[in-house]
Image 1 (tube, one colour):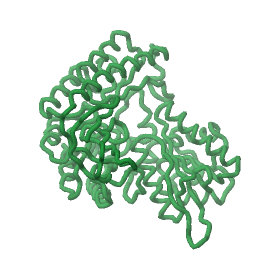
Image 2 (tube, helix red, strand yellow):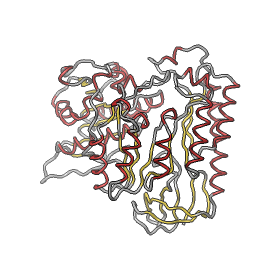
Image 3 (cartoon, one colour):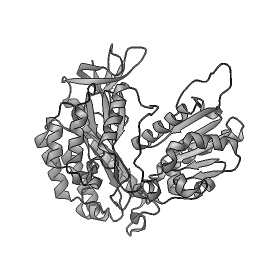
Image 4 (tube, helix red, strand yellow):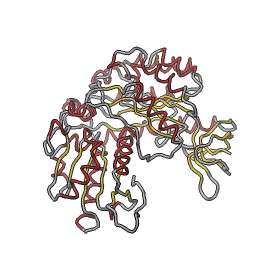
Length: 465
């Protein structure tokens, strides 16, 4: 995503910064925070990144496709530098944190790499990079690392980030609210703990202050994010901390929707379910990344769940909150996954009838235990299994859409085009990742709620008026 801006100050040419934001919602928050720091320092953010004085690329490095996307963006900007339209290229975020100085060799021509611990220093680093022709690495905390030392240990970025004063990428009426950083789970396939360090809950006062800031800036929907939202407060030994926090967020005047993302199944308890069920603002939607259903595969993944527990959780959620929308994420082709275990997963998807589902083939990421496990599944088999799962989910999603024909729903308007066709979402659709409602003859502005009736479908989307 390219971030846009303007350039003028009494005819004086200002140094311009182009910004490319990649990755997940957690990365998006980091991008918005860096953009805020850049803007406050007086740099001008331009929408023409390929002709900026400095380009900052905030990267993801979680799995192979994310790394490939990041390297493609980096190399494109390095080519612009060689062509003389860009002066400096800075790479920030997860990929520098994961690769360190190796990143200089992956894409020659990078002027600086910036790790997660140095996010708040991005404006100062831009100034130093413009003034120097020597590539530099800013990876550990400055007081520990010096300016050019490789510091990839995750404990070197253990501060809980203060995400206030962001220059927002998302529309003004919805925002991500990050409540923690890092992860204590040691899933055998995941690189996140090695990149972002151990789990650290944000202090409740800081979360509430940020939420109030976002709402005062126009947000009517807050999407709660973390590596595992349901782990919130456990590192501080606070019981039912997430449920308590949600209750306090509800009291913010002007906030209409609260959405819970990235909720690990093992941590969803009765108190949290009852909190969602009894709330007027927490939408009946929960994102539960189960990853697999075979108990043997879950054990190999180092997940604490079992098949029986996951089935039981879904039954409980639907018995307490009858209209709940469930989203999940699955991994196909994990090492050792047999045809029988895949069929077990397929049957689970048919039974669960998720409202939304994302599926990824297993990637053997270096440094993870799963990359070295025996029984690696051939690529063609993995791809075939992903396709099978997604085709199964497609039938479920299309059938659910047909069942909604003629029903009424409240939609939050996200955008309206010149012809008066709007795009929005009902409570069962999260921004960016889920389907949308196409609103015919929409007279409401973005950020408004409208009452609509479902009159048709278009692939995964609903047509309403």
